Length: 270
Ligand code: ADP
Ligand code: MG
Image (cartoon, rainbow, N blue to C red; front, side, top):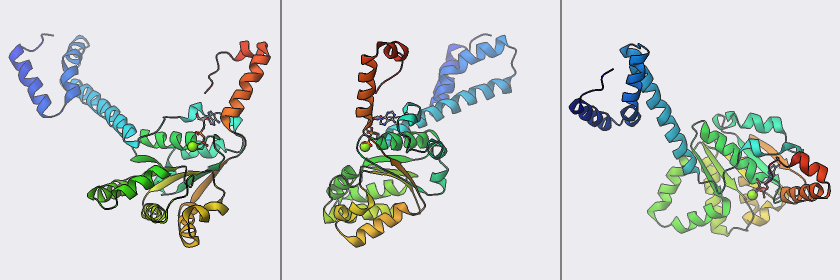
């Protein structure tokens, strides 16, 4: 097939740019040549181009969504070793990764000691949600409280609240690690109560429920805060020792036993 004359091509590129059809702009000549070689009709050619444009757009928006979540580090479920954490129900986690809990505005509470994979699972579930087109935001609880306190008297506070209200899934990591001030606790409670019914939440904490009063500073607030995320809530307990410790021990055992090293040298460690 003849390529379009330069003038028409320049015009076409201009129109496609004005219509924001970037992928069609970059692909139209190549696809046209292939279409001519395959004897493809005009409508099919148009179909192929629009499909390419849609695919590329979906990929770009998935990248944007993933970036907007602001994960500290991106983790996925396929790197989570379920055999090392038998208290975690793999079926439940796999089910949660299908994200129906988000449509149902349910919550996930991950409870366990440091290093037991709570943030890993929270991140992996949030990334799965992102891949399915949900609006997600990940916060360390203390970071959210600081941001809220700092923004309290400014217009950015309203902006942040509006952003939070538009989310499908809010992740609060490490809730209760640092005792919040009374103001901090009130602001956090406000976020949780606003999210309730409207936004699904994933909360991770090392705290057993009994210690929450201490952290949030009042029985009333604790009752109200706890009542909200634990209502319609999937609880996952990551019992046992820290994964790093477990991992280090496994590695030591492997070094002591060269046979195992040879067999598992391809295996990935953290
Ligand atoms: P927590 O949030 O409970 O303190 P993390 O999720 O940060 O723990 O886990 C600590 C480190 O160990 C991370 O690098 C994480 O990816 C890894 N890790 C924890 N549990 C597992 C697991 N079962 N399989 C693979 N990696 C794990
Ligand atoms: Mg963590």
